[in-house]
Amino acid sequence: MIPKQNFAPRVLGWFDQHGRKHLPWQQNKTPYRVWISEIMLQQTQVTTVIPYYERFMESFPDVYALAKAPQDEVLSHWSGLGYYARARNMHKAAQKLVDDWQGEFPMTQEGVCELPGIGRSTAAAILSISRNESLAILDGNVKRVLARYHAVPTWPGERKTEAAMWELAEHYMPDDRCGEYTQAMMDLGATLCTRSKPRCGECPLQEDCVGLATGVPTDFPKSKPKKAAKPVKTTQMLVLLADDQVLLEKRPATGIWGGLWSLPEVAQDEDIIQAAEQRLQVSVQDVISLSSFRHTFSHYHLDIVPSELWVTASTTIQEQGKYQWFSRAQALALGLPAPVRTILETHQSMRQLI
DNA sequence: AAACCGGGGAT
DNA sequence: ATCCCAGGTTT
Image 1 (cartoon, rainbow, N blue to C red):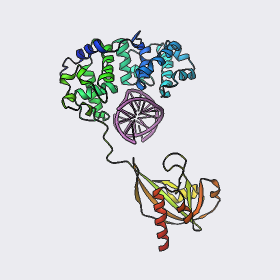
Image 2 (image 1 turned 60 degrees about the horizontal axis):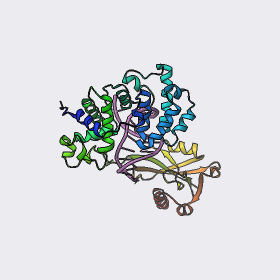
Image 3 (image 1 turned 90 degrees about the vertical axis):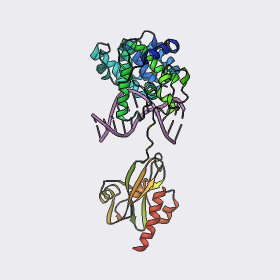
Image 4 (image 1 turned 135 degrees about the horizontal axis):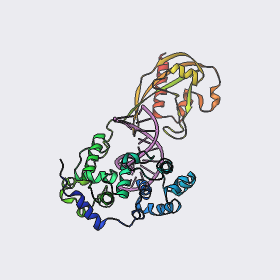
């Protein structure tokens, strides 16, 4: 059992002296007002949120006003905050509160979690701040404070680590002054125990913060392990040959190889003859497997499985714009993705062997 | 350009 | 039940 070490009293003492207590949503702390502030603060800094929050409350002073407002009006009040899905969820949640809960927030955390856009942490924030319930939050700020205080050795994105951190959060949650404690933890993380340059000298937890004792508190929380192994994707590329010409496909302007001419691709598990005959409108006479190879991007490996298809072009697919037949010389003069160029050059030597 | 972020959606 | 992503900002 981890001792409590006066954790909450120290955090609350610091809050009494240094915490922010006059923000708009810290007055008249109804569940509704706290909820709106929490959603806005999930995505945006305090100073930006304040004017949005005040305009929002003026137009939608309670859950009934929000529920009956047209979605467009809600979104226009959100305009500039981004993450519009959260505003839409909020609007839906307001309607649910009115329809199913007589406009009141449910009495339990589980009940509050049923509302769209509200999960365990946000529900705990709403209920602890507005009703002084002893429910712990675990947002990014609290994660950072706890990860440092205990020098948590693993990445909080891991399920086990996250579960352990929820236990810590609950362990330190006091039975009194719950709402203030929630506020205090968020403030501590936001103002002192920041991601870089934490001001440990001013922290109420400095004497027994294990992260600080290591000498490098910013080593915590441990960051997401760098993918040593880049993910591997596989694709099949088709070298369609008809009358000494090869079929290329113009890539969409955006995304990988945007705007370049490339070989037609077929999904890893797809039958290439079927795919070619259906999608490329050719009749396949012969198939030759070429050697597979790996092309590596900054963020993944692409295993390419090329095949040479000897075909007769039955219809006029070349008129569709996206596809075009080229002589090998023409093709090699185009902007081609490096692996495609490799295939076409290799193919030339293959051809001489046949 | 990479990390971060709570919740939702997909698997 | 678990993993991964959308949609942004911050470092």
